Image: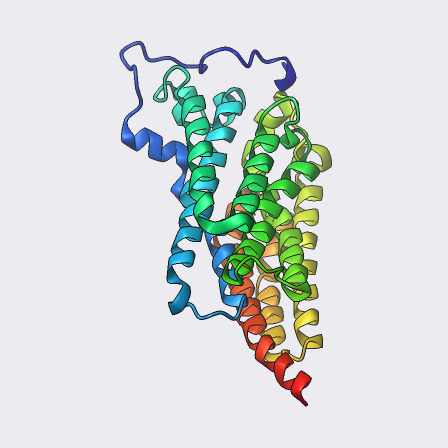
Length: 318
């Protein structure tokens, strides 16, 4: 059976007749707090890269962190779990919806409610913050929900997630700190490069779901290219993006920041080499050990851009 032929109007695949509403713990599990870190971190990188005083804009920082993590990212997780409930019944039947712990249409209701709450919260962050939130919400629904369902193709689905979680969050952090001004070419370049790298990170998440994706007609990269082929693509995306960032930083007269980013990229190579030999077995290891080094390079780059602004002002005066 393919995903496209699944009856999307049916209730969850498992049903507990004694349960009429989910517990708070089940709701928290649906919203997946552990996934909130990447967009919150990217937003913080954008804030740092803006060059603005952090203490003077702590309110915007707090608003943005809540928006990117507990609201937008959480809503995207709820949306994905609702429209993936048939796939999860194969891959991860213990999840809230297929297990029946999230009964009836509670999953869909929470997804819609959290989406509306995210948009309402975004009005506190000005036109740029609201527009960025709207785009992130649109990408999250397009990723999971038919008829678009970008997730059906790993190239497009991973690109949508990577752009939303990393690049868009970074640019939003910079723009709101600048009072809605355009973040500039340096921030745009690094945000796009880290989005490309994050495409590889998103692929890491697909190795645990190969069987269910194949049976439900979802062409993730491991399904399309095989486990080894997808592992190579993920490593290329992650590695080349970081090397490109290091080169840009060097060209922008930030050599020590470039060296630091390159060193972090090289430190990931032993993990990647083993991952390409045993993709399914090693994907979690790269996520646990390699990704923290990747995102550490993001913050190093952000502090580099923070120093670049006064350097540019000195060059203009000279």
